Image (cartoon, rainbow, N blue to C red; front, top):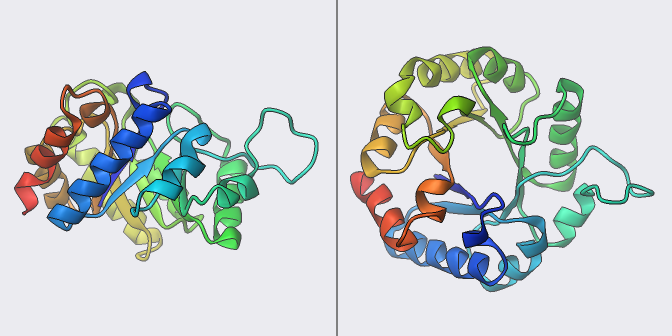
Length: 219
């Protein structure tokens, strides 16, 4: 399971976001690997209508319909066609109460929830909310080019153990610095079910080749 966060990179905005999503769809179908894309909210509906792979939101807010100008309504994410969402990414941190509320709202709306954490303790705490997945990403390694599975494997294995001790139905992903096939293999060997990544593919000179390199170790 590969979750590709488009963030707000210009290389994954508007028309370029759709092109990248199509590349992900091509690799996913050709190689039989699950690839999920997380574009910006402005691009969600267009991408959902053009590709046949899962499209997740990057975030939504803990709000009800009403007067919340500039916020992201969860129901709007569903109407745009998203089938899941990231929650509590390191670049958009939430309170524990909001994380729990967003997981509950995700379940009510039929969205797959991926709650991001930054260490073992937070991974364990997030597991108590029973999301579909917890994705552990030490923030200091995000965008560094140094994979968490190489630099801090104990954070990955510790998070797997902690999450499963709370709720063995919650899947575990890891991210931060993941960019190569070796990174993916090492991550899977540490017990996770997939990876969350961004710049290693989005900002690559050839995103398709970057994806092919990423999945090469598991084919």
